[in-house]
Length: 291
Image (cartoon, rainbow, N blue to C red; front, side, top):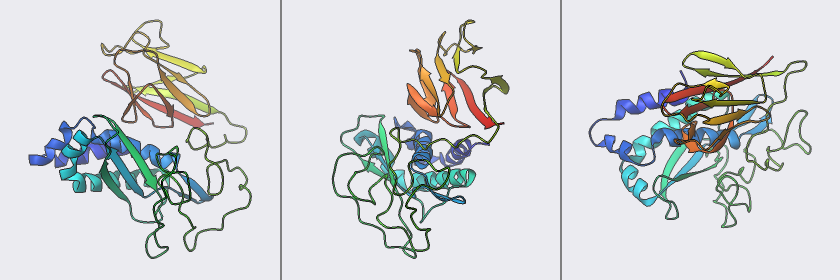
């Protein structure tokens, strides 16, 4: 069972009495959960072959109306979201430098239904004193500030005690995005190189049926002319298109109801193995594997 599905089930167990008001918000908790997963992926830093560190301190900025609805339950919701991050990190073999915390904040510049996630790596007090927040500056790609280390979305100012030394050159096989190296322009982690002599296989799973992606593009829709036909009244004739590559992406083709990728409404998104795509009332699981 996927991490997001388990998170949804845990929340269902909390929906009683006043806590049920959380679900009347324009922003749904599962959308925030998906955004936190992506924040971990986008800011993961490879320290050595056995250790990949991800942020452990998250701030979810909400519009004033959404914040007013969610703030009375921020403690419970924050704990559940932190548990989801912990489960996801275990699945991806990520590690943290300190305790996981998720905070809610109000952002006056956001409209109802919109949210923004910021993150940073904070070491526990036993290994390093937490660095001060970054000074104000131009916005960074992860919603933080560019100047100095320690800002949201950026590594801490100093490596924690016991951490491996920062290399002067990237280790063999390492791409950009680690400590001391520029982040990729897209903000995404560089894909892992394919296994020697192997190739990447791509497919989607819909209602338990596997559909192999044998070409560089795959159109999904209700039309018989689509590469994969989805019999769902909420799906447009040519709803969306998956393009395989490094990385693979999905693009909405001007559909009526749009697409949701890993819990977030979007028109275009990067896909990873296990990405959950919702079109109409149909869920599509994107898969890729070497060999």
